[in-house]
Length: 227
Image (tube, rainbow, N blue to C red; front, side, top):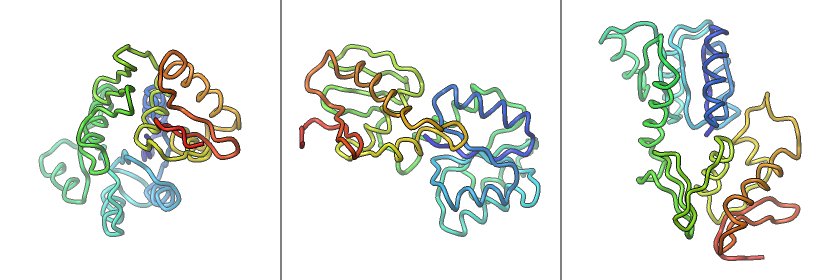
């Protein structure tokens, strides 16, 4: 899942970004309202974490502008103000949820999970299935043929992306843009290494084989071998 974090206080931004990335999220950071709009113009995000007090253009204005453009990306507002009127103003501007500073990373993560489940583009169930492979978004558990499979956060995110796009060919570029941010990804073989590790865990000891390589094209998670 790809997140745009819009927070002008660099220390807070660095702290939150690190906490989200440790949970497998791909995070890009913007520090002004106008920079946030520039990011959204060029990249598709799943969720925007948006501070209200920003230079150049405040968060409420950013939110209103995005909704005016028809952009329905989920927005979680951050603010130091906790009055009912402030929360109503944020929600009326088009925000999907509201989180008051200071907050714990655990609370932010819980809000993001809840927003993900509520998003119109997410499946109605929290469990994704392909053949006998199952991924539970709520409990963060993966099983194959009933047997639990332990995956670190990044591999879990990659598998989630594959399962949401089962049967579709995903190129290395598509995987990179979904899972990594622009700053951290700079090695062309990283995707191949992660896919190899993921295949070893979800496929090597099981039938049918699901994760397929299409040479020169990319990868596909599917039951039928269409090669």
